Length: 129
Image 1 (tube, one colour):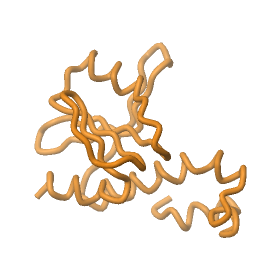
Image 2 (tube, one colour):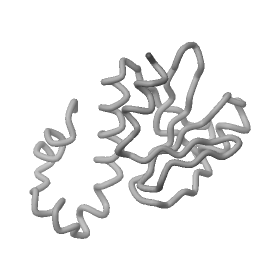
Image 3 (cartoon, helix red, strand yellow):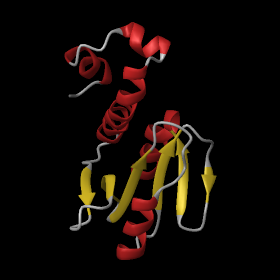
């Protein structure tokens, strides 16, 4: 889908579920969050791809090319900052940097930048410009 609202409507997700945070939303919020990030990446002119390890035990939500650099992007719907799959990707391919987006504040680590969900579009737009 090209829009989080359209996706929610097509799935029959009532607005009340989003506003009240019912159990259904708890199970569906990861999907909506990934959809939101995909929209933001595409709006920045990027073409997001998906990566999974051949053993099927790890995956990275998006991999994008920014100015000739491959950047893996992990999406977290909450403040859970564990990124085991992203770490596996990083160790295997040695990207210059990795990006995780979540409900947590902006922070930089030696191998990773955490960008708050609300700022992911602005972060990549700055990178693309």
